[in-house]
Image (cartoon, rainbow, N blue to C red; front, side, top):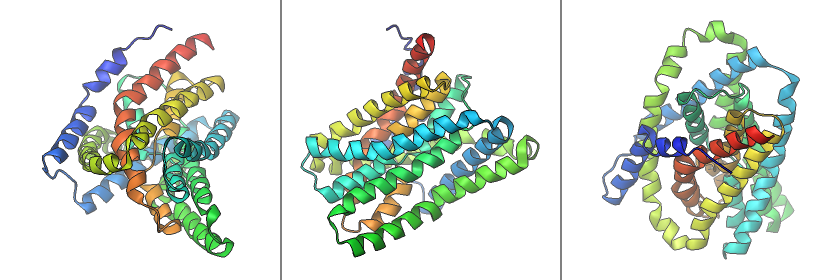
Length: 327
């Protein structure tokens, strides 16, 4: 297999990667580069609305039955990935069932910022991708968290499990990520390209700069979790790289097999390979209050996120391009 590694090397020297590295380095020297909580929330809302509007406009213009198969495949992957994570963690670590379910919920869900970075990666290279991919982000956000929590609650009494599970499901559907993303997507569908044109300079023009600042903050957070990773042991660190790499490559293969463009297959791979550190912690803390969230956030933010950001996304893109030439 011959691959062009120009995209990989160019990604490593992009502003986004370098500012993430700066934030990570700052954490090692106790230099506080974190965004204030209010600014962090504002940035998160910006990304949710920006992606939702763009996806909604694309849905309005490109709606077709061709979307059905990718959505079904995404739902299937979203349900299977937490099972795979739960079993894998049992094989390579001594983490108890409760925390294995918590970690599985985080890896079954997806990362908004990693998804945003993947779109920016493709847009900066003028690579086309399907306009309905935002709907896959919404679809994948839900089943992974629910399945992961269900696995963790198996040892609890039915009455307590049902109560905590229902609260967690409510959090998933009414939490900020799904609620705003779905709402912004509907607005984009209703407004169409004509309505979106008036706000497009704001949401599209500011996206690269705000993403860089957000990654500076996330780099600091990732660097701050090194101690948690050391305590968890090498098994969890290895899981944070090998598991997303494996499911990411499966995502590339699945996306290419169902007819997605190389750009679309890259995004699907990024979605299934990423891990949540925004939506999942909120739902897990409600359903599994005794779970150690640091065991889930440390690998998802401290290992998987930087891996996908630096190497994963361009690697999935290279493999998707190669598969596009033979399928």
